[in-house]
Length: 195
Image 1 (cartoon, rainbow, N blue to C red):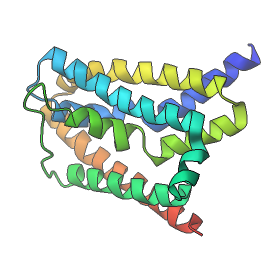
Image 2 (cartoon, rainbow, N blue to C red):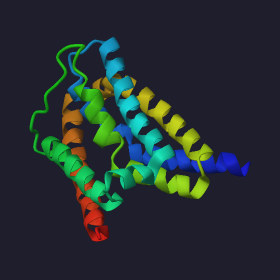
Image 3 (tube, one colour):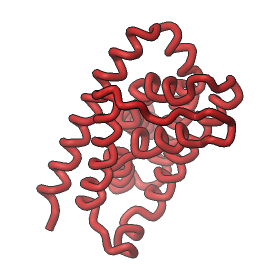
C-alpha cells in the first residue's frame, strides 16, 4: 500500500479514536430529545462544524495562536480538562443538562463540538500530526474523521432507540465517569507540564 495512504489511514484512525463520536451518541441523543430529524441533523452539523473549525484552525496556525495569546499547551490542557470534567460529572451523577427545546437552540451542537469532540486531546493530536506529516495528511484525516462523526451523530437518535432508554441511561452514566477520568488525566498531564 502506498505510504501516503497508509499515513492518512493511520492519522484518520488516531483522530477518530480521539474524537470518539460513539461516546457522544447517548449525550447527543439526550440533549436533542424531542427535536425533529431536521433539527437533529442541524445540531450534528453544528457539532461537526465547531469541532472542524477548531481542528482546521490549529492545523494551519497551531503554535501561533498560543504565542499570540500568551498561553501554553499545558495550560490549555488544564482548562479544557476542567470543562470536560464538569460535563462528565454531570452525566455520571445524572445531573440534568438543559435540552434543546426548539430549532433556535444550538447548545447540543456546541457542547458536543467542544469540548467533547474537539478538546485538548484532539488539538494536541492535530498539532503532533502536523509536526510529523506536514499539512496534507492531517488535513485529509481531519476531513474524513469529521464526515464519519457527522454520519454517526446524524443517526444518534436511531442508535439511541436501538439501545433503549435503560441501556442508554446506564451507558451515559458509565461514559460520564470515563469522560471525567479522561479529564483528570488531561488535567494531570497539563499540570505536570506547566512551567
